[in-house]
Length: 96
Image (tube, rainbow, N blue to C red; front, side, top):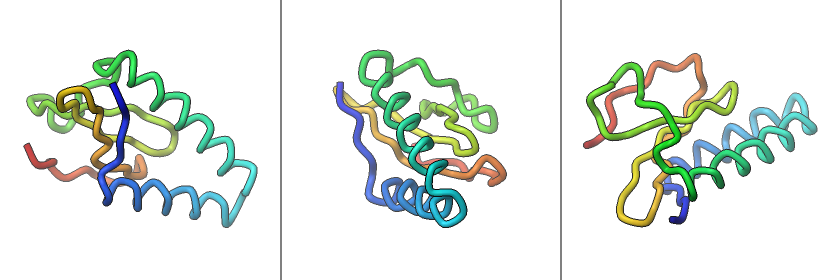
C-alpha cells in the first residue's frame, strides 16, 4: 500500500506547512514529522482513520494531525490523501 497526495491536497499540505513555518519554524518541522509518521502508518493500516463525522456514510476517512484534518480514500493499493483542512474549517462533502 502506498500513500499519495492528490495535487490539490499536496498544495493544501504545503500551504499549511508554510503557514506554520511563518510563525514558528520548529513547530512546522514537528508537524511535518508527525504527519509523515501517521501517514506512513496508513500504508499498513489504511482503515485506521475514522469515518468523517460530518459525513459518516461516505467511504472517505480522516486522520487528525492537530490542528489539521487529513481526508483520504483507499483505491486499490493506494491511500489517496484528498484534502488537508484546518480543524476550524467545516468540510464540504467530498466527491464519491
